[in-house]
Length: 329
Image 1 (cartoon, rainbow, N blue to C red):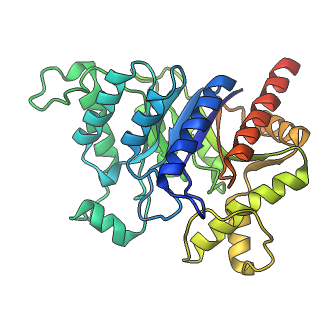
Image 2 (image 1 turned 90 degrees about the vertical axis):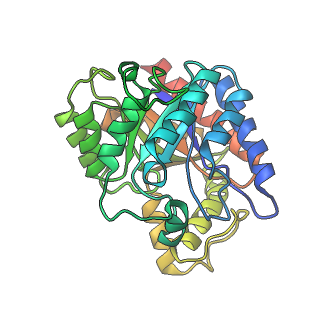
Image 3 (image 1 turned 135 degrees about the vertical axis):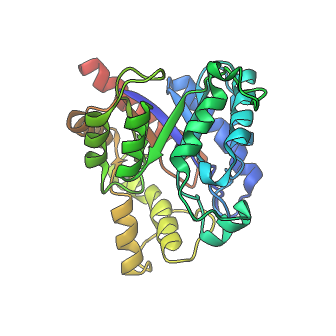
């Protein structure tokens, strides 16, 4: 079982973006020490609690502070960007950090539609995501040397490209193109098993991948006891509830959820249901159940915890749980 980390550079109440970047570097360094495979960062805009809007810059910051862990985007929201620009950015990163950069591509805007219009200036009525993915792959390919438009740097770097998704659309596209697939079950678990079945059943081998490769995102909040883990997780539940009810903000400290409106709490608990929350034995059992049921190639852990020391400890516990399962197997 390979574990990775998905980070949003959370801005906590009483903190700022500079603190968020420092804590993300600490998290990546600890993940590297523990043997995690990847450290991915996600693109979000106009969110007071998320500092990872300029994903390529944060990737460079994290990659420069580490030495072996793969660092990448989970993901770049491709409709916000020209494929050539993305190819140049990630070609630059791959040149700076050879063999360590991943590029996950998403179809959603990563924000509200008003902000999406500010990002794109001119909103195209048609969905060009599949064509944009193919164009981007071409810019990164070794076979693009004769093209009149080149990504410099970028051409020939063949940065590994993943398709991200939370529905059947991404699964179908990843299978058709023969690319690895990552499912956003950490906040949208509804179609997880169906999407994996579609991806595996319809996968077509390609120059990039011989066989299907699946990674799923899973919420994670581990602590010494189940009760402490649930207390720490209350920060994310409260934050998600506020987001879904139109009141986003920085990540709050842990606290009681009694005052959270029932509708918001229900939405948060439903969206965050695919999670491992609890003591070492509890999260170990959850990891084992998920792996036996889904036969995953990788799991990428997501979870916003207010206190960075508690978040680092959660990472250690999850790594220990995975190692115990490997030893038992």
